[in-house]
Length: 341
Image 1 (cartoon, helix red, strand yellow):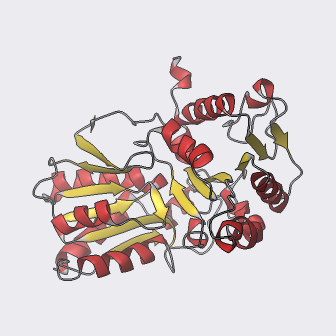
Image 2 (cartoon, one colour):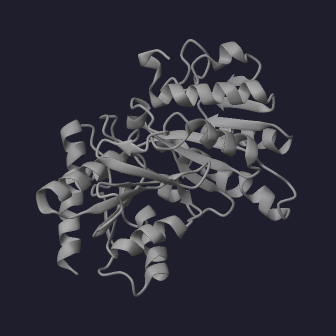
């Protein structure tokens, strides 16, 4: 493998290529997918050349993309939609909420709708208010929709294969933009000084610890683009303040599966949840509520959350960094958490 082909974006591309090569029912639908462009982030580059009859570029209409894919799924195909920026998912909300997810539920799961929607989310690239948001909180909890978030410790091909070929219900896959340019860590047992262990099979929650999962005092829960910030916060907390923590990187956001997460949190009794989207009615809210129910009596302090502090993300990279949660804000929140014990 060439060095320039080791990035996560190339691993996703290879996974999609293999899946399309194995099953003629798999279609790609989205804007500007055809070569030589290959999508805004080049995830689908080369697919239209290899599978010219099964990669369909569309007008600028996210509702049409998801609507056409839903119809194709009901006819036995396995379409994969690319929404160029996650911010545009709002334009397809009706198709997801009232159509794709409803059909299996209305017919007692006897009618499948195996549609996969994948889209990049997140900021820190200076793309401005309508191309930098993390909007997954508006989709978690929709009945019949599974929402997952790719991360670097996740086996990439198994992750996409499950969503595209092995599920008969709609899936929404969140891909953080920053991770496209990073190398996968799907096979490592250690990442720097962190020990890594994985929970689950095709959708993995990754748990990392600097102390071999012993003597930890706080659990940091996160996903997607906040992973590196939580890991750096855990490192600094141990070196500077002798506070040991474990970091849990979620693969599945919804429906919530508590077993591995609750076990990690029960060991410490203190929990901090970090998300890049806005905090009100967010991912962290639901996870905090369910963990509180599951761990009542074992928590040593109320669960803390950190999230984006601005309702609109600025274009300026410097201002963007001020409002998005950072390593420093995570550390400050942990200090507050420890003081409330």
